[in-house]
Image (cartoon, rainbow, N blue to C red; front, side):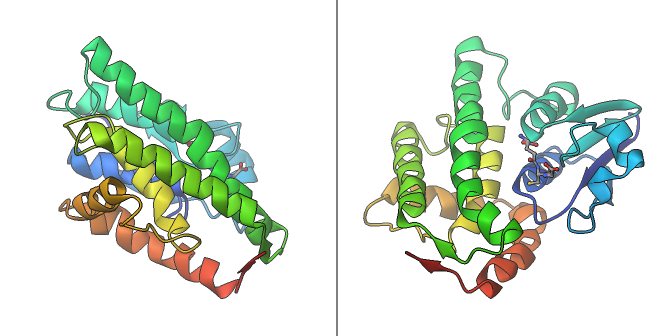
Length: 220
Ligand SMILES: N[C@@H](CCC(=O)N[C@@H](CS)C(=O)NCC(=O)O)C(=O)O
């Protein structure tokens, strides 16, 4: 096997989703930090790897790939001992893909609408409507989970990694009410019990969570 390098930073949810996949697959890799606050992603060296200047980016022996969803499905397809994290069966895969697109489109944009003004525009008032949209995400995820223990059914897949990595920072804005969303609350507990969860996601999200709290935001 050639050399794998992941470019990223712990605060980034899509980066943590790739870290979860790399750990689940038990792969060796180098982790190169690209500090977004220091604008390292805009430096020419990184633009050669990913002209869109986003993290995560993967270098698999000279093959460069951006976007966590593309990276995770590639890693499982190329290096997985089996296909359980991203099934080859067309219908099973289609369900995983649906969850991945839901993550890319809805989960990500809902979260970004809350965090972007806080992180980059120094706005500390979050409109209630944005928190309501986040609650809408919890509701949809709870619906997905009525079909099985994991987001795409009975088995753990990369869809679970993307969504848990995204949600980890959102709990600060809106904790999951287990009486309203029991399946979602149980799923979070289940994912946290994965042996590699804390190392790949939990501990790595701690700093960004503290950063969010330090902003002393209010919901208006
Ligand atoms: N859809 C992409 C999103 C990647 C993304 O937007 N990453 C953010 C950090 S969470 C980033 O690198 N932003 C810097 C920029 O857009 O210049 C993925 O899943 O990898």
